[in-house]
Structure formats: C-alpha cells, structure tokens
Amino acid sequence: MSTVDRNLTGLHRRWGLSPSTLAPGCFASVMATGIVSIGAELTGLHSLSVGLFWLAVTLYAFFTVLTVVRILRYPDAVRADLHDPSRAFGFFTAVAGTNVLATGFVGLGMIPPALTLFVLGGLLWLVFGYGIPFTAILGSSTRPVSPGVNGTWLVWAVAAQSVAVVAASLGIELPNTSDSAPGLVTFLVLTAVVMWAVGLTLYLTCMIAIIVRVLRHRFGPEDLDAPYWVTMGALAIAIVAGSRILDLGGTPLLEATRVLVGASSALLWAIATWLVPALVAAGIWRHAVHRVPMTYAAGLWSMVFPVGMYAVASIYLGRSDHVPAIERIGLHWFWVSLAVWAIVFVAMVTSFIRTVRRP
Image (cartoon, rainbow, N blue to C red; front, side):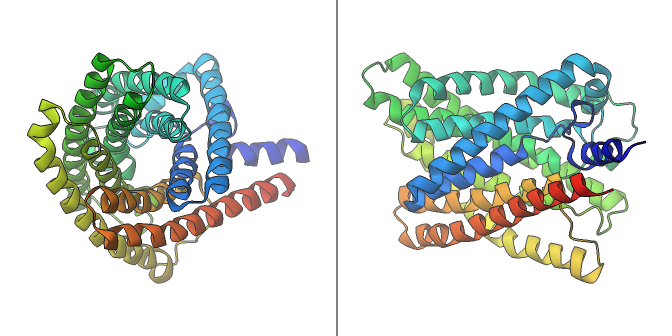
C-alpha cells in the first residue's frame, strides 16, 4: 500500500469522510456550529453569527452529499447502521441539524428557506421518528438491546424539540410578514406545543433506557463519552422551545398550556443547570482519574451542541420570563460555548492535518 493510500485509509477511519465510513451522527457539527451562531446573534455579535451560520450551511451541504452517496452506493452499510441500537439514533442529527439551520434563517429574516427546511425537517422527523425505533429496537438482531443504549439516544428527543423550536420561531415571525396566513400560524402553534410535549416524553423514555443500561451492564469510563452531554442539551432545547412558545401570540390552545409550559421551562432550566457540574465531574473522572486519552473524535461535537444550547436556553428563558439573572448567566455562558467550539474546531483541523501527513 502506498503512503497516499495509507493516509486516505487513516483519514476515512478516523474522520468518516468517505461515504463508506460516514457516521450516522455526522450532522452534529452542523448542530453545534449553528447553535453557537444563534448564541452569537443573541449576544449582539452579528458578524460572528453570520460567519458561523454560513459555515454550518457549508457543513450541512457537505454531509448531505456524502449521505446521499452513501445511501446510493453503500445501502448495506446504511441498513446495518439502522439496525444497530448503538448507532441508529445518530441519524436524528440530520433532523436537528436541518432545523437548527431553519431557525438561523428565521433569525436572518429569510422566511422562504426557513419554511423549506422546516418542511424537510418535519418529513425527516416523521421518517426517522417512527422508523428508527422499529429498526434499532424491534428489528435489531442484538438481544438484549440495552447494552447498545448510549447518549446518542437522547438526540431522538432533541430532534423532536428542534421541530418545536422552528415551528414556534416561524409562528412568531410570520404575522409580521405580508404573506402570512392565519391557518398556517395556527398550524405552527399546534405543531410547536405538540412536539414540545413529545420531546419531553421521549427524553424521559431515553433516560429510563440509559439508567437501565447503566444499572444492568458494565459501565466504565470508556463508555462515558461526549454524547452523554446531550442529557443536559436535550433539556436546554426543550427550554428554548418552551420560551419560544411563550412568545407566540395568544391562541386558545396556547392559553390553555401557557402556565404548564412556563413552569416546566423554569424547572427544566434548574435541572439542566444542576447537570452541568455533574457532567464536568464525569469528564474529570474519565480523563484525569482513569487516564482515558483526550484526543479529537467526531463525537466531541455532541458535547459542543449542549454547551451552546444551554447559553441560548438561558438567554431566551431570562428574556421571556423577565428574569435578568438567568439572561446574564446565558450571556456569560455563551463565551464558554464559543471557547469550547473553538477548541474542538482547532482540534478537528489539527487532527485532519496530522492524519493527512502521517506516513
């Protein structure tokens, strides 16, 4: 094998940049970059926000092409991922990544592309939301399924909440446009409330599955990887969805659920805040105590997204509930999320260069 062939083989194995080795959760980098972009906009850093947003769009286009090629050229590999309970739920990053970009377009005032992505994200949710539980749980040849449960299962809940966030964001902005339709706004409000409730239900379901996995099977430091940060990130995006729902105009459905949504959002923020130190301690236990190497892996983006989402959730909740202290926490935490994003991005680029140069 030539040096070039060896470099490409290492690149494919480490990065999944070949359609044959593409990971189902490849859109996590889109989610992470997109949410940090939204946080930058809320913090008042418009130029940084726009730059990060178009970087997320570029990543989305890149991974979309690779995914389509993989489906066409390697259908057996895709089928194997769909039936693997430890990998299948990573496909929900495509749903969340699509909806994060849709939310970004709403923030830029570009409603037509936001609506297009909202429809695409909704269709992906319907396909994956019903299909993956059947393929990965009922259709899996692995028995029992519980050893395959991991942090990526929570992306199922994140994807549902991402639909709620876009629906609520569009429901807020469309009445300000000349071509808004009352029927469409009502549909968006209904979708936002329903998907918010579905997302919370899925979160509880996935957490029960994770607890069963931890209690019944060996769970060592090598198992406690970055995607477990989604335990906090899934709560944070539920807070964002709830805060956006509270900012919607008054409708009979919304008035009936406003108290529940508002109280739940405050409670979820408290739990998410409590989880942050626990997750940091878990990282110290994994890397400092048990010496698991801290090297770049694509799964690190699953940690960046929750960190960024916590900042956005705190800002939105503080503003919608008129609690300046929570908003200030979000504004300060944004700099933490930006620093984490920058560290992972630099690590990614550095690892990419080293992989290409390695003989």
